[in-house]
Image 1 (cartoon, rainbow, N blue to C red):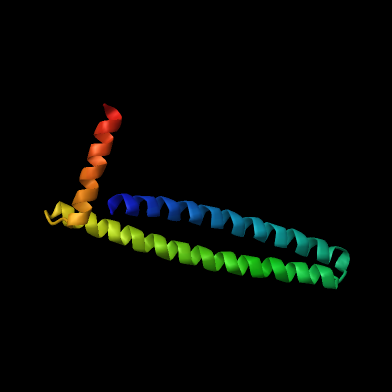
Image 2: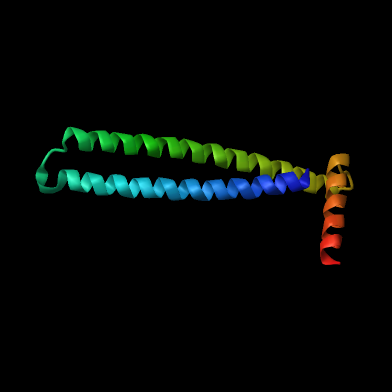
Length: 112
């Protein structure tokens, strides 16, 4: 269980980082396209407007994915903290205790 939580946490952090990178890249592309479209005070053509709309939709989608990933990350961290607090108080779920013992055995086998 603990190993699962740690893996989920790492995965969430990785997903959040990737989504932030994608959002920033799309924002830069949108800004560049907007600057090109409005250079020389010319109105953007239909194709440029469609591209701008597509980029804006992608940004909105990525921002939603980012919000979802952050929410999932907060949930995983909350569960992890609850298990740590319970363990510190001397109350440990049987599944968590079994997972920790398995981690200890795996580390001992790896070191030896």
